[in-house]
Image (cartoon, rainbow, N blue to C red):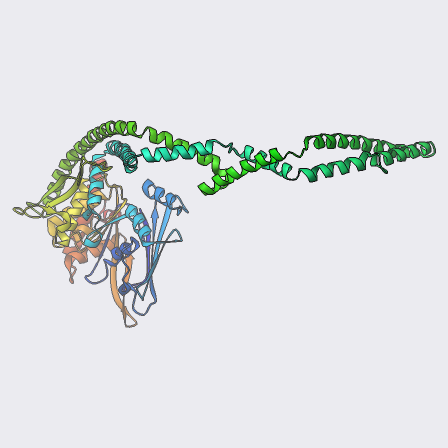
Amino acid sequence: MLTHLALKDFAVVRATELEFGPGMTVISGETGAGKSLLVDALGFLSGLRADSGVVRHGSERAELAAGFDLAGNAAARQWLREQELDEDDEQCQLRRVIRADGGSRAWINGRPVTLAQLAELAGLLVEIHGQHEHQSLLSRASQLALLDAHARNEAERATVREAAAAWQALLDERQVLQSRGDVGDRIGWLEHQLAELEREDLDPAALEALDQAHRRQANAAGLIAACEEALARIDGDEGPSLTGLLQQARSGLARATGDEPRLGEVDTLLEGAAVQLEEALALLGRIRDDLDLDPDRFEELERRLGRIHDLARKHRLPATELAAHRDAIAAELETLRGAGDRLLQLDAEIARASERWTEAAAALTATRRAAGEALASATTALIDELGMGGGRFLVELEPAAGAGSRPDPNGAERVEFLVAANAGQPPRPLRKVASGGELSRISLAIEVAALGSDAVPTMVFDEVDSGIGGAVAEIVGRKLRALGRSRQVLCVTHQPQVAAQGHAHYRVSKAPVEGITRSSVERLDGEGRLGEVARMLGGVEVGPEAFAAARRLLEEAVAADAAAANGPAPKRGARQRVEAAG
């Protein structure tokens, strides 16, 4: 729910901060005082297009900020996690700056975001009723979402989505196969390519061994000469050799060891060196024996390397990737050879998938139809209570475009909310209702009728009581207060009967300060509320009768809550009852 709202240099507001709690909060004030500025601010924080006219005269920018408690709002928390904006899993901060030149910037939890992101998150946090440009219920998608929430048909919707996904996957597979046309030519071409590749051993280990063998043959003469020279220097018969010199050194040391025992350690080390030399001689001999100048072998290695390099150039791949390319061609061939049989199988599978979707969609339609009838009946009754006698509300289900011929994850129909505002009028789509006051009251009726279905935790009603008064205004107030038992409700009102129903009350007033008109917002306590409701009842002259009537309205609101929760409220002093109403 909304916990606080801060405005700075916004329209005629210099700076103000408001705290909000659960239940119903009313905002009142004289005409032109700026009551709807708070609603406008929430609208801009919900992504409405920036308007430089809202920047206070003489200021460079307007700054708006709102805080929300996310407890119980799993959808908003999930969205923040997906967008990596979840600084705090329990709280969320929205901020927007609108410059005097018309530009604006937005932040979520201190991080810059686009207006689209701001609007998407705000749609999970707050819903504003009263202005055509920000009425979520005017959207057919929102109407469908509300109806589905009222029907509690998540299981049926999930079944339809899964059936549609399975059907679509089969259609996609068939399209891919059909797009290949006659695959006979490609099969022949691929078979030729595969045969060429399979004639060579292209595994990376084999290529490495081939390369090493080629290098040995290419340098065989030099390798043989190097080995023979090393063998002669280590243990040759011509001239001094390492083995002979080492043996002479050991013999000389042996004669002197009796006089210097440490020379024995030197002899031991030299003995180890002699062993190493013998091992080196043996390995050199084996290597020399393996080396042979074989022109035929070298030519064969040259031909093999040439074929592999030709294949690499032909397929435009490094030689080390030819094996993977060979395997890919083999896999494609296997798929193409079975394409005809697979197409026949797909036709049967697609038919079965279509039937499963049709059955799932029919079950979903049944839940929507039942919920639509119940919602229409309850809303029609509430519309009558809200001063629109003879009005009707209908939920129309119409087939979606192409229903049944393609896999639609949303089901087989679309929803349209229809309204006849007065008796004898034909029902028209809700989005075409002209009167803002009627639209607000109809929206209120829908919300109350669907109480507990809408997932948005904060609802704002701007001038829902426009054009009504007396008993109807009191009914509107009661409905809003009832809505406030399960949702946070903010209501801008000029009707005392509505204002008296609030759990909390703010008053907006304006006055010139240093020659500039400024609005201020004040939270009212028990006595303050009594005075404000009396003012709204009595006009300029507020007499005892207005105070008595205001006290009665406030007491009745508290008594209605007590009766709803625990039966009749206990009797208390008048002052205590009025304070409790605050």
